[in-house]
Image 1: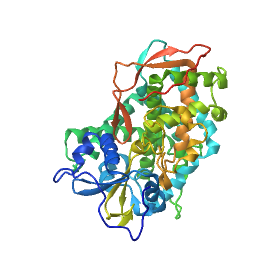
Image 2: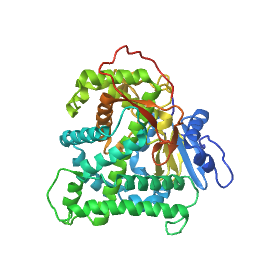
Image 3: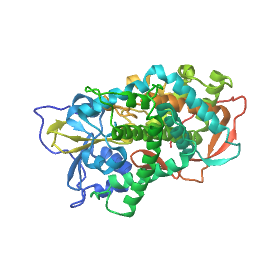
Image 4: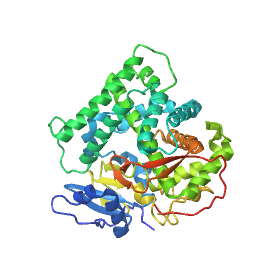
Length: 466
């Protein structure tokens, strides 16, 4: 068992890789962040020390230590300022990057948009937009379902959170998002920061992508600028909000929150669905069981929020996909003041990493952790696990504000698609995890669409290892 923070603990440095002179472990992190974190945990244990150029870093691999950082001592740990300053042009001071009192204020303003009372209306939109997408699918067609998932969830996020239609903008926004995310991924892995104003090719692509997203968000906001009614969405909350002096939120801050929610609000669900369909393609028995449940519960009608409690296996499939391929594969914080973790000193300025990718594949918490077994979530496994052994949406005060929204959306979309099609993964097209800010499927998820038969029988339950 790992030790907890103790005032009398030894001040010895935690074990870890030595790395290279000057660069430390930065090349290893840049080359294969998932492999680096996994190897560190296996070789050095629950607290791993390493360097990223001149910056000290720790990797924590035990739920108790993760809880200490995210909950018990969360005020001493902020989002890593060195890395997040690389992306200020896109996220500004939105919920993803802001800190302290200002973050609490913005979180309170956004929370009503994700209240349970509004979920029913969101659910109807999710299903309607999914059925509209399915109307364009044809049996036998081969497509990259990841791209379709990104487009679908982008339109759903725009409609539910901002009451905006994005039919004509999807392709442009998707390209801009891809450009921005690619450049952010590169920035996170290099030791030096080149200001956006320097006309490097990557900076130019990044700035063009940000500009296209800014133009879209400006149109969304301008459409509502002279309308003061509450439409029951997030944008209404932001535009009607007043501070203690009675002043409305500034235009730049509204822009930051809208663009943050638009990107985060669709990316997480799209990736969850992409990895889910990839895993179901590897594991046809689970896919058949999913189809049987959907047929039994829905009987051919469209799913609603009221059906969610009975779509238990469907939810288990999503939970297992999130375990094996968590969109937020790593969580980073920076220590504000000296402290100790697990008996080791943590100087101020240390970057602290916690990796759901590593934690979710730890045999201490999950039996046969590499296997895709949705049924493991039956019997309240989530309640039996250590609190932070499973954290696909983070944890503590900064847990993803849209986690419930994302789970509901993933289950409803998955059930809607499963009624009509089986997605047969094209084995000739390799899928590789591609860590950016999120864990994307490199190369896409190419599938052949196969119409579902009316009845599904003969379910055989097995496990497969992705």
